[in-house]
Length: 535
Image (tube, rainbow, N blue to C red; front, side, top):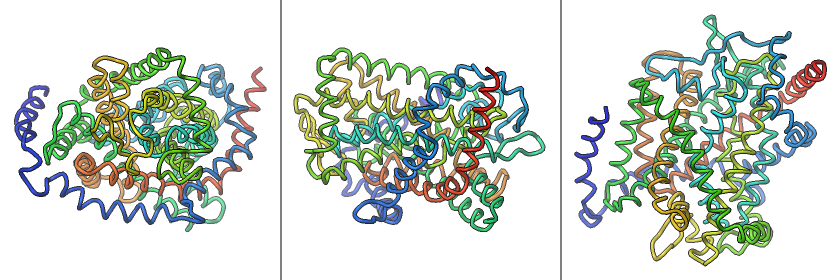
């Protein structure tokens, strides 16, 4: 296999040497021009504004605040309990009376990767600790590397503050949706588990006499989740992988992005269509390792510049309420940038995580909700903040102007950089050859995220179009097409489309959460009572 991939690169490499001037409009630009109207359409529809603020952000943050207050600050009060659940302190409760399945198996069809999908979906024989470790290793990725850089490039250091706030509030939303994911999961006669918002919306609303509304909202979620798998879970990932690969090798060809996209599509296709287990097993082992290395690299830079950390934190807080980034649009502007990027990174409120958590083995749905509560904290509050501190420390010398050109592009040493490229430059300042490390990390994170999101999208596709080999193959071919589109199109178009698809999932998901949050209250009480009784 390695020789086959090497031969592909050998055949394609000469094409990368064509200069930009060999064609009036390169292939990458043609794809971008064709995709931009699609991106603009969805971005306009999803992010419609009320009083100058996108309504979906009001809904997302307002709901997170509501759930935080309604459940009595579960992100604080139950933080310790969540850690104890992960530690296995309450594992003996799983043998007590309760609902649940004895052996939860994820849906596996021909061509899927059982090992990969079980890891990503927290298959029934996985402990709470293993579930959280897998979820975090899958969550840490290009949202933390490229998304944070985009937020700071657009909104300045102050965007970090609002990312943290959104992450803290998002813990409550993640708790609610993942509890519901386990509570309303479907189990077929073979013990196969199907879960996620599609199921808790349709089944939960049917219980309350709103069967038709439940069906419509569930179908809408499935449709938008498919779009999210094409966008944020796919195109945005290949887009960032392409940026760092082109920068590392200095490829400026008019079709470099398309070629890199084709190679990525072949690699991902081998995994999700061909079912080559050994490639997946390597990815499963390498990606968590790269995530740990990335965190250690951030800590090395932060502690190596410890005297600047207090200045960076002061700048984050000051700029949150008095931003100086050109074109950010004041406090509301920087707040929106921070919330948007945080929500994209941890996906709290979008409901996608509940698809994975639904297959965990537990008799108490709230136990997995508490485990999920920790994810936005680790992903956004801890790791995103680390990336932000690295970039802010790097820019204390005025390397680039916050705000850039208004689209996420900043000038460093006379050259334009965006997304992961900015983070790469920051790392290179302090760690020799870090550009190679970060390129490998971004590519591996991208491939890992694409694999897991292909599972999310496929489950939604099955919900809408049924379960069969032909429908599965149709989805996977469409998915691979977006790998190429993401690599070829501009970051501005791809991330606008990706944001729109991820945030579109919020609308139908919130229908389910608002109808069913009393169920979560009941299940939380049931689990906490069981914990008290065990003492």
